[in-house]
Image (cartoon, rainbow, N blue to C red):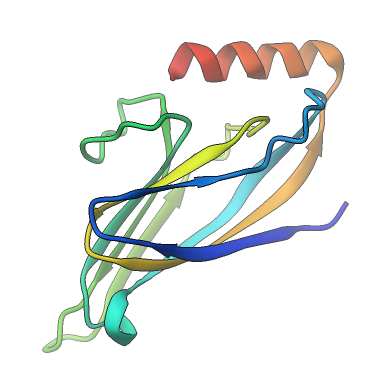
Length: 132
């Protein structure tokens, strides 16, 4: 199976629903890359989070609902800086959300398809619901 990309834009303080659910619980996706750039050709600072849930109030590694974090810092004196981290232990079988905590951002998310056994599929669904 090949990798796929999801790209778009999320407005400051907003969230976007990213549809990945195909209704087959033995098929999922693992995020392999999550990159953002601030609006205005990178002149706007931005923080974004990938999550299973609709509501995110801040970056919290302790929140099992969150599994991807990215930061774009538009510092004109030292140059633009970025940070991105994805928890590789999450298989997405349903839809996910990208949240902009500050600043409008463009994003590029790379996902790789994952095939699961029925037992693994059920376990991942339970894990996602438990964390959401």
